[in-house]
Amino acid sequence: MDASIDRGLPADKMAIAIGRVNLGLIIMAMESFSTLECFIRSAEVGSFAEAARRLSLTPAAVGKNVAQLEARLGVRLFQRSTRKLTLTEAGQRFLGEVSDSFRTIQYAMANLASAEGQPAGALRVSMGTVFGRLYVLPMLGEFLQRYPAIIPDWHFDNRQVDLIGQGFDAAIGGGFELPPGVVARKLTPAHRVLVAAPDYLQRHGPIDAPEVLPRHAGILIRSPQTGRVRSWPLTSRWQEQRPLQLHQAMTMSDSDAACAVAEQGLGIALVSLPFAVPYLVAGRLRRVLPDWYVDDGHISLYYAEHKLLPGKTRAFIDFVVQRFAEQGLPRRFNALETL
Image 1 (tube, rainbow, N blue to C red):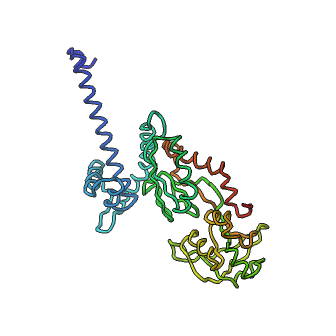
Image 2 (spheres, rainbow, N blue to C red):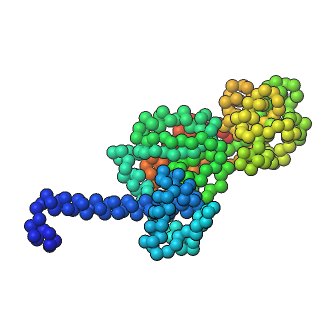
């Protein structure tokens, strides 16, 4: 029997004492959790300052937490320089051993913190600016009706993000290389098609084969990431392939801008089909060589590979996949289907 109970400590004082012990344990656990998070974020981004920005702390606080962890473990986890942090061999080994478990605890805490068992909390999602505005934002009202405790924190940017390192719950895009720990769920094909304004086609006559394309003004896409204009092979309905050769009259950095320029009758644009759909449906642009397209893989929903996803992330993934299917977007974004 506990000595304090044996001495007849009053029940109310006993409850207070136990409460203080439990509170102390909770505080110690949370401090350890915070210290570990500072280490993991610093390792991911290579900087105390950047880790502090993402954790809403000061760089001094992050550095202090990491130093405390090193003192507790008795090993140096980082080699520090004025430019960046580099993990030591011990730091690399420790990161590999704790990162998955840390993420499991994060997800478990997020799920327990959900409002009355419902998905809740800030939902950080990255997506392309125009694609998100056209096809994801219109779903937001219905999504929030179903999950009112979720707070959207959506970022619109036409570049690949570091999903885990930057703390995103999910991202929507295409043509991304999957980093370790990230999985992709396919939403639609990522087909590119040739389009031109009706008056351009009327002025220049029929275009009935890829071989005549070099005689036409091309509105091409320059990658904002690499600065290059990529060479694409055209694929036919019958799985034939031809080189895509257009006279480069001008370049744009995104498909929506290229559609707007093509609408002015200034040439033939190679654009992502989701961006062209509104123009094609309205008759402002027409397909050129409709039996030919560029296959650029898939538009996918990216998220961390983990069995215990937060409820808010799982709810978003399932909702988007369901609504894309119900709206027939996989078919609409297939270049071989008729709009």
